[in-house]
Amino acid sequence: MTSITFDSLGYVKKLEAAGFTRQQAEAQADALREQTEAQAAALQKALDRYDEASRKDLATRGDLQDVRTELKQDIQDVRLEMKSMEMRLLKWQIGLAAAIGSFMLAGFGTLAAVMAKGFGWLGF
Image (cartoon, rainbow, N blue to C red; front, side):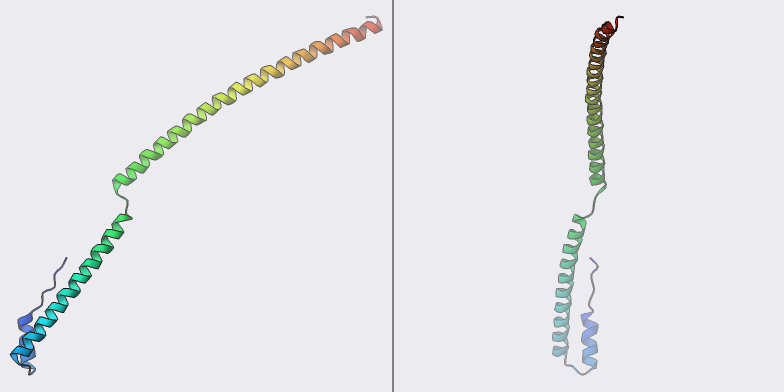
């Protein structure tokens, strides 16, 4: 904190020159010095509270690095989940393709059998 100096001797001399007695001038100087010190202490206290409160909201480089690390880990987790999902989808696609192929073969076999019977009516 920058301290403010109060020239009480110079103040007393100015008051004496203006017609105050030495005792009155010293009493005025003491009162003014005490008031100035009290205001300076109150101001410093307020500034300290403000500074402390404003620093709580500031991110440090360490805070930013922590966030970056968390984001990298989250991205890595999402990529692993996507690969897992791709494999599950691929298994389903292969299974569905096999099932559809089986149904198609069965259908063609049934169609062929029906056609064979049907052509038998025609004498083929």
